[in-house]
Length: 134
Image 1 (tube, rainbow, N blue to C red):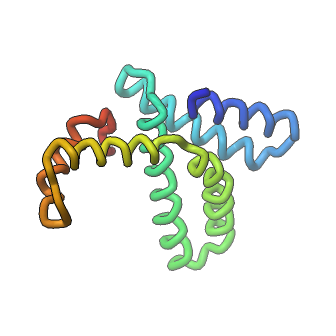
Image 2 (cartoon, rainbow, N blue to C red; image 1 turned 60 degrees about the vertical axis):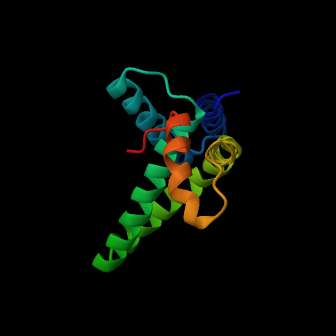
């Protein structure tokens, strides 16, 4: 089951359970995924969905720090809830084993032996991956 399908199942579960706040967070996630699909005219795979989720979490962390500086505790609480609600989705993703496999393959191809050789393997791992950071 793809990551997008699991998120849609989570949405159905939240709808059935009547959890409106969690449903709102899941809809935000699905909207961000759909926006990227429409913009790029592609269907995102799990790795690309993971990039979208990581970007959303980064935005939440930045928003929390800005709201804390402004003294907006109500908005801090909302952003923290959104982060906590999306964290299980992010933790269940399967892209981490795939990325470590890609990195291991790149190290083997370039013959990198340590930290000093990391610059050799980076272009190879980027070329083998379909992920385009945004």
